[in-house]
Image (tube, rainbow, N blue to C red; front, side, top):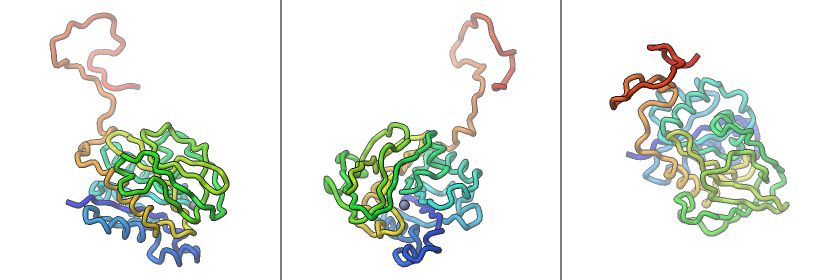
Length: 261
Ligand code: ZN
């Protein structure tokens, strides 16, 4: 069975900005899904913010192996209940690709637990991406370095936790550097953040970028996710030991007491 991917797009600039509309007539989400579907092992569909429940109902997410997230203009407009639902699925084992300005989305900041801020400059600079972890599955088929002719500069410091792995580092005309491809694991879910993807440049038409997205989806796919998430299994007493034990010392909790207060 193919990897079931939902490509989530905020779909605001895609509709309202003339340049973006021209570059991505089917929306950035449409272009990203099309790039993913070039691989027969992937089956990508799209969901957008203006749909009911942002297109991410309980049922849809239950049938999603990997979710990709692109947002920029209205991170605050994303319903907290949907954010919690996505986080729950990541903890269960759903993969998550966070793209470009998604670094500041509610879901990424929730899962990272840090501000996720960075420095930026919109000057159409050249970005040279260095593949510094060449044995990584996400780097498969890529050159040691490649160029995006026009990019938005995203610079350090990037206020994220120390990554599990750093796959790419970018350098820009202006001299800044950035950890442009980093991985995390949260619960059962694998997370890949990839920074190129500013909407007024044709970055999602770039073949190297499209290779990264396909590789990222395949890497993030967890074929054996847990059936229940962490919030379905809260702190609870294990009063009956599996092996015989001798109880010793004073106790704080009354017999039969459950949970914390
Ligand atoms: Zn941007």
